[in-house]
Length: 88
Image 1 (cartoon, rainbow, N blue to C red):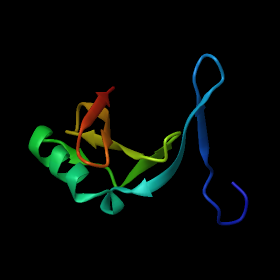
Image 2: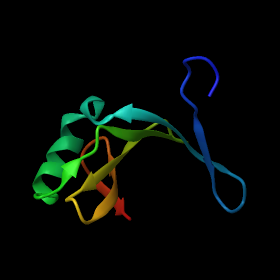
Image 3: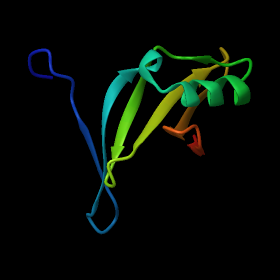
Image 4: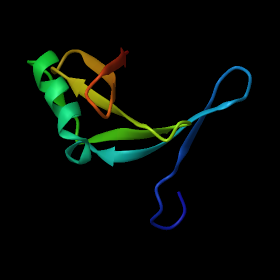
């Protein structure tokens, strides 16, 4: 980390094609559709303050939200329109 700039993560597929860039962002900054999805599908889980905003190769955005219920920690990826992508 240099100065006050946040690091940017770059993602490439197996053939080295650019897939996305990502940067830390506050959960509070995520679109309402993302928050609504988390509320509806992860009751009993609390979102962490920080997440990751991904800017995909097609310029669309996706959000990685980290949630926990105190025992289980999950990483949930959601498109800006609230469409589920994946969970780890």
